[in-house]
Image 1 (cartoon, rainbow, N blue to C red):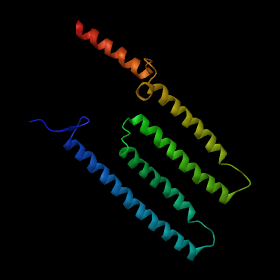
Image 2 (tube, one colour):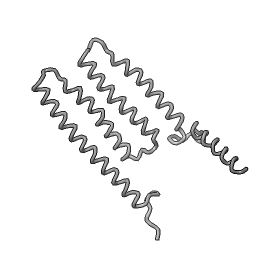
Image 3 (cartoon, helix red, strand yellow):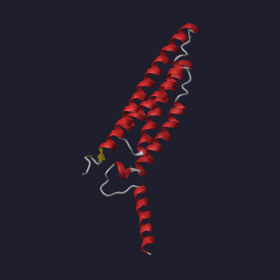
Image 4 (cartoon, helix red, strand yellow):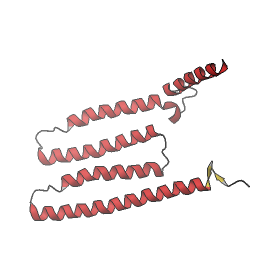
Length: 169
């Protein structure tokens, strides 16, 4: 007797995926609780120790880690499986959160010199290059260009032809 399939997945496969999603979701909830408790603790300690709002720095830094953790869950839960696409998503999210942190630090420490434009400019160039490489190298698997193959697909075809010739001998 054959087992029931759901879009190519067996019920056991779906159960494993569901278990991973539940574990990821619980992990994010635990991290959120710890993050909120930590933020409250930093706020209270800052209130007793200083009039300077130093608690914002660890909170903003910690938020980068939490946002990455949340992104990992969302990427998995939404079924984004190509690792290259995951990499682009993580780079974009990291860029946004780190730039927010740097803008706040720049604003709180030195409003006269706007130094944050330098990392923002150069990192955005690197992010743009990463996205272009992703679109060029993995284009065939993400966008239909009516028969146009990506560089990766052409390399795979060439390698396959070599292997076929080798096995024909």
